[in-house]
Image 1: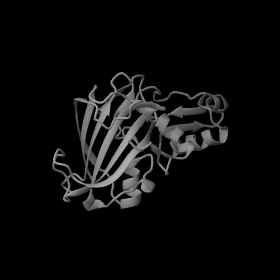
Image 2: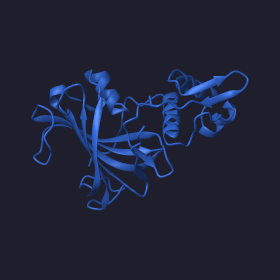
Image 3: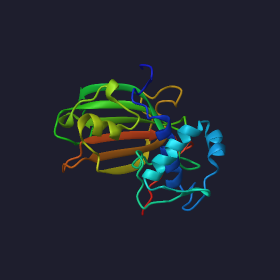
Image 4: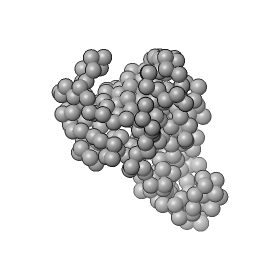
Length: 235
């Protein structure tokens, strides 16, 4: 098994902070109308600078998730639909939320194996295997297959948000997805420090669509239910 590789397009620190707060809002850890701590106190608690925090707060304000009142403070404004990069990432820490990051284990361009369900129009696909984290806690391994009909990806092209990679590199946007959640055993390629192959785990199969009638992506995720939970909120 090759050593994990950090993606070359890691999100800027202020975007990471913004996304972490968005996921806390979605998880109900930050409530509509709640006043955030003073900026200096908040920056210290998050281990960042005042300047970086203020850029994150400005990003939240631009997305309609923060009401900044001069002389009073910063107040959460919850919207009906999350504008975050990880709005379709359904795994959360048991306590809620968590910032998603990933280590790439491998990227290959392959013939689709017989055990994959039908999706896309091509016989080949880019296969991406990753170790997923929430707040730097390893919670899942995943395998993504992107149909060759929409393009081909390599390691230097990847960023923390795979859907953003699709948009920026291939000019496609994932508009909807269908998840099927069950139980399975960890695959044989699971990193040893995450879990033993064949150990039981939570399991998610996902089909993803752009604007075409057929799905262009199929993925499978094995997650540790002692560390993370699958959450689907109906609004």
